Image: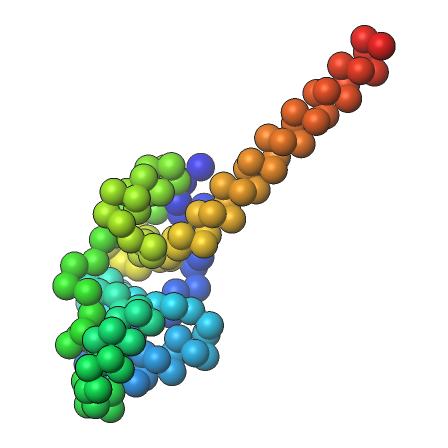
Length: 149
């Protein structure tokens, strides 16, 4: 299974010249913990950064900076990690672990943003797979009892 098959295709994006106040409003409106910063290139949205709720607290609120004048570009993570949508899910999760990131933008072959995989998404997927395996074990035990009393 590829990461493109399981990622969330509804990504909340913002451009780097928007205020962090606008980023916070988007996070609240869409109930997300991060927005992906994109640059527009010929009608394509290319991820160039990420701003998280933690960034807002640690970089702005804790330092008492004016959130109305600071832009997303001022505080976004300096490097954004992405994987292509044809990457195997296991590889994407392993990549997240190696880079110690909770959110992974997914891009197409041209580098355009097509989705996002979050730690929550990965945990949900893995827990569903473990539940399926547990059901298989239980089914096999019942089958054994029925066929070999």
